[in-house]
Amino acid sequence: MGPLYDYIHQGGCYRYGVGWARIRIYPGETGHDAPVVICSELPENRGDEMVESLAAEVVRDRFSSGLPDLPRPVLWIEHRPSRRGRGPGRYALLTFPTYRPRLTGAGFVRRVTLGTPRRESLSSREVKILTGDG
Image (cartoon, rainbow, N blue to C red; front, side, top):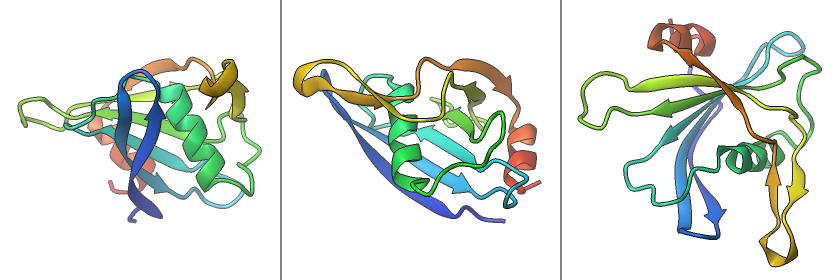
């Protein structure tokens, strides 16, 4: 099954310019499964690493009607492509302290965030199972 969304997300990074990432969203079975989001770093990405803000922006923009009532309502997978083009790269499943975007910061530098994530390594086989591609 292919992704419901497949697009380039442009996030605001105030210190280093604009951050870019490829976002693919695979829907979960309504009421039973969490949607799966794969966030791939693009080679031309010059932004800083602020996945907690990027995830909050995607949740806010793509899941405005709400997330499923599950302990982990979104399976957020971070993909770091191989730098030399060999192999699938590295995958990690991120767990956030909250899945409700909240504002942080002061003044004009306020951003939405989900908080600092915890990472667990995933194999490319596990990613294929979660997305329904294997």
